[in-house]
Image 1: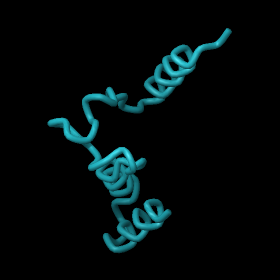
Image 2: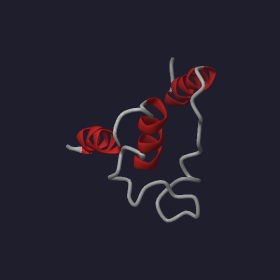
Image 3: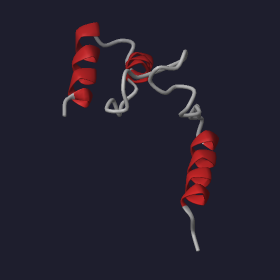
Length: 75
């Protein structure tokens, strides 16, 4: 039988091996000192997205990077 925690731990281990930073959800939760979102309704961690877009596309104009972020965040 496969349980959710086994799948979660395997996924986190795999993502970590690919270079992704793994953060504990309770630490970055809304209302915490290191919160990365205002509420759980915010699925995308916007600061991380903006940082990644800038890091991966340093030569394109800032407005184009901002537009890319807007498109990702648009529901």
